[in-house]
Length: 279
Image (cartoon, rainbow, N blue to C red; front, side, top):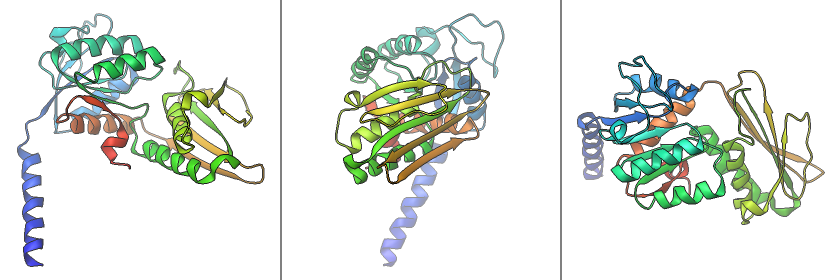
């Protein structure tokens, strides 16, 4: 017993010592003028595990941000980094992945709205470099997806399901990446392919129906950070799972956790589920 406790103490001490002496991870943030870009910069300032080495935008910025002058996405922008965090748009993300693959840099992707063709390109890039891609970086949302899958599996085909989401008026894509993640969780629970279960996609509807497929309703209003709800109905009862975000720091802190986790991984396509070790 004492030997076991001693071993645990030594292991705990060594792990803590390792993190204390571990070299900081050089970090690049793309889309630095965007909402998430700005939030990531703020969160990085408070995180001792990272050194911010470059910021990029899709246009020339003639001022310094956090002591760094933003540049365009190119080889020089990323040559000194270890991990790139990208919250931009699909076209920009694919450009960044091409550069990252050439330089053998790791990439955390928080961008949403990818086409099937884009997704296939990301998979190809992941054979060359480590990529962690998630429609949502929040611990709570990823737990919600996990619970959605379990609930879908438990309730079976006697329950119909639908997904509701609300975001700020500036968000262009719909359904949100998170809503699609939840839809995929429903499909996984039923052991079916998500693309075969995608139903209608509504925008700004006060109410929307259940169907044999998964319907989505997206609301765009105000400055709401994010609300998501999955409901299952048998016609006799309803089961609801939901999550509400109050602070955008949830996503930036989750992205930094993803970057730290990815920093010692081999090429492959990972998700927050891998990071959180959800089975």
